[in-house]
Image 1 (cartoon, rainbow, N blue to C red):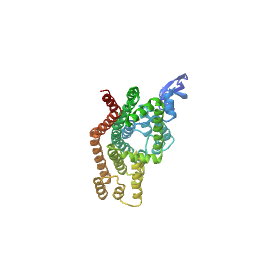
Image 2 (cartoon, one colour):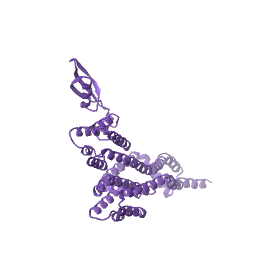
Image 3 (cartoon, rainbow, N blue to C red):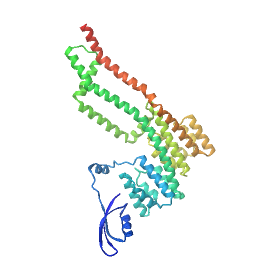
Image 4 (cartoon, rainbow, N blue to C red):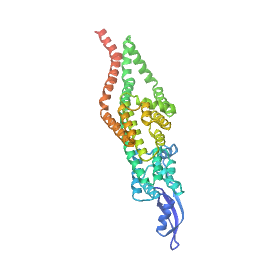
Length: 406
């Protein structure tokens, strides 16, 4: 909550000075008037920012996580249901928020509303906080007079979407952790274990097999040029990050993610659950299908899936049936395609999309629970391969030396 330094005069004309907390200068002025003090000047006291905070603000590093967005949306729904005016509701929520990015966005929204801008346009000024689907739902609420219902539906959607995204994170986190652990183990062996054997082999002037030569050469390079190895890793990381931020990179990476061993199918179903849930909510709210598809494609989180959603949107614009164009994408299983067909024929598409989302989410939940069992064989093979390489490269020459000595 910002602080404001004020000067004012009491009802008897006595000069009053002090500092008050408030959402903005208007709120502080109202508080002063309520205590019979007429404001003369109100100036915001800028807090001293530490270096980290300055860097975060300069490079827009503050993020609004899904938990904070869910809490805000729930609070908006509850306050609007209680009949609280929009500006007052947002100002009240501001008092309990700590995230600098969300505070900045909500303050700007309040200012825009006070100048007469509508709610959806005010929210649309902050696309990094409120995505296209969120804005579309607010637009529907404005046009139908049911903003509280729009916020309630968004809260339900965000809560379910949070579960889906947590599943996606879990699916990626476990194999990533395993890969990092194996990489660290290989690094330790290269840096500290193999060099000890290298000096031993040199002292005994042994004729070494190819595997041993490769291991010793790799280890020597790692020890002598460790800074180049680390620098190369950083360059590779930032090169990959830059590539992934290009249109082509995002599309190819989105496709690669769905083809990862073990976790690819889980990610695919999780994204399709997100698509179906978004479609159902937008359709139920009265968002036109073509517009809804466009909004969903921009908020799905995977450019490869988004490409197919856009192709579905283009098919609908040409007058084709949703079931037919969904089948052409190849993204959905035959069981789900039957659900599509039944929902479209019976006019219960939104309800059927909810069933499809539930179906995929249940499959993802089951797959996450059995993920450890699926990945363990891969871990055993990787560790076994590492042991085999060490055995062939290190212990075989030592065995040969022992035989010669015998």
